[in-house]
Length: 421
Image (cartoon, rainbow, N blue to C red):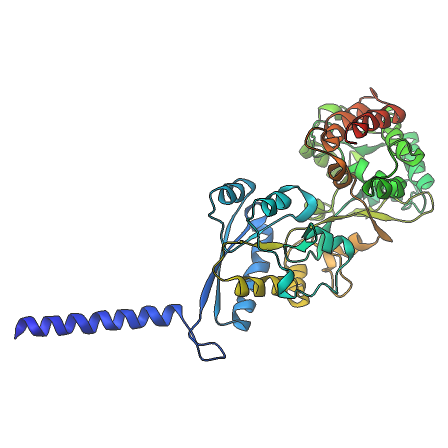
């Protein structure tokens, strides 16, 4: 009798446990079927501190709108972990991607790792051709759409400008005149991190969009070359700045942190940098100003580099493609993007219907978007000839050390371009 009682109690206990498990993992959707799923999402680990407040709100709101979908959001996404997961067929349901900014998404597609989205009716009507191209490989869409950008521009010390009667330039000639005026008054015009491969090219990025955007368009379309006079002028300007002693003292051996410190301390008047560093400057300077370099005709062209804050792809092996795509649709919605605009410090919207936060309004004072020269160089490169590497590791250092003139820099890139044909 005692043994029977124990068995009955065990059965009741197990029944209760199974019932609790069932309740914790399932819910009823509108059709009455039990169908709750959990999606594992890998966020951008490198940008966790910036993105986490936004995604806490975005994920909470998404789950409120979709009670049958639970988001298990993990900041596990790095280049290495994603590459390893692609090779080992162990991707999560969704993970962040950088679109056409790097060749990686195309490689993932070619390996069969990503789910094509053409049959899921994502609304792309709010987006530019550049944004759609960012998320596209071949003729198919593979990620949610980008709504934010990074760019490069000139930061300046308002107090120094005011002291010497200098205003933000309206033309390229006025921009050049600022350097002459500052040097005449004994002020170093610009801080330059000549030691850092990924710190020293931002002036070149800004100049290329301001002076040679049409040339970059031709190159992106498989036309023209680097001998275009405006492209040569871009390179020659950097050479001349270095030759005329416009850069900070000992800039060749200065890293990015040192260059930034020199600028924020007031030792120099300007610094070319990325908009992603805007919070660094605003937190240490009350006299910060900024402007995009005007072209010959005065148009202020912002080098466009679309941001991956809200761009995610779906694993081809996910067991829940419909639910995963619902998450992508939400990330591409105005509602989610407005949260990101308000919560991610320094992020710049590219869509007119997204209101920028007050801290970045000054960074939206451009007339149009221009090409990112590095993206164009990457697009025209091949497996054997990497023009982007030549630009970063040979052209920029050569111009800064006066080992290359503008014409010589153009010839170096043209010789490499010929080998890609």
